[in-house]
Image 1 (cartoon, rainbow, N blue to C red):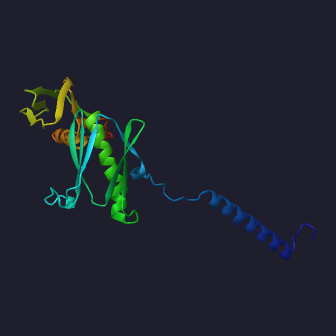
Image 2: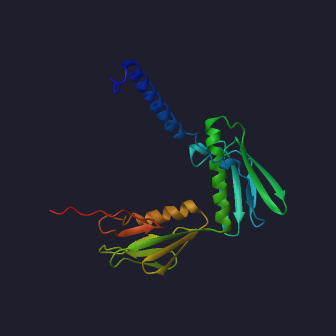
Image 3: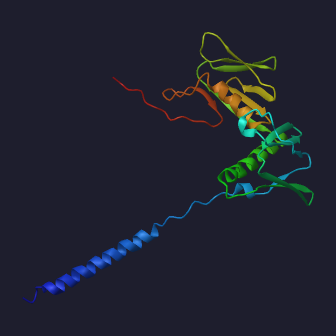
Amino acid sequence: MSGMIPRRLGLCFHTAAAASSSSAHTAIRRTFSTSPAVLSHIGKQVLPFGSDVVITHDQTLIMAPRVNADLHSTTLHIKGPLGEHSLPIKPFVNLAFEREQGDSLLTVSVQDPTVKEQRAMWGTTRALIANAITGVTEGYAVSVRLVGVGFRATVENNNMLSMKLGFSHPVDIDIPAGIQCTTPLPNKIMLRGSDIQQVKEFAFKIRKWRPPEPYNQKGIFVGDETIAKKISKKK
C-alpha cells in the first residue's frame, strides 16, 4: 500500500506534467517567431554620378511612344564617355539634382508612395538610371563560352560573328551597332557595350544556337552559367 499513489494524487501529478510539457512546447514555439519582410528601399537611395556624366530631363510628354506604357511619360537623357541613353520617366516620378563637395547627386521620389504602381516604379526607375550611368561610364562585359568538340568562333570584318557549332555549315550572326565583340580564345566570346540589356540580349541570341544540354554538358554558356548534370538511363 505504501508504494501505491492515490488516484487523486496521480491525477494532480499528470496534470502538472502536462502543464509542464505544454509550457515547454510554448517556450519552444516562441523561439521560431516570424518577422515581416525587410524592404530594400532602393528607390530612396541617393544616386551619385561624376562630372563626366551629363543628365538632362526633358519635360516634354511622349505622345507617340514605342510601347503604350510610355504614353505621357517624360524623357531622361544620360550622356557619358562611352555613349548616350534615353529613358522614359513616368509622370509621377520626381527627380531632384543636388551638388555636394564636387559630386552630383540625384534623388528619385514619387508623388504618392501609397499607390501600388508608383511604389513599384520607384525602385525600378532608380535602378534603370543607375544601370544607364554605369553603362556610359564603365560599360558592361559579358563572356560567352563554347563547350563542345570543334566549337569555335571568329569575328569577321568587325561586324559578323562566325561560329562552328557542329552543324554542316557555319553560323553567322551580324553584330549589332553599339556592341564590341572579340574572341580572345577560339572557344570564348567577349561582348562589351554601354547598354546592359542590349549586351545580354545579344549573348542569349548566340546561346539559342546551342543551348546547354545536361547529359554531356555541352553547348553555349553565358557568363558563369552552369547546368546540373543528368545521367542517361541505362537499359
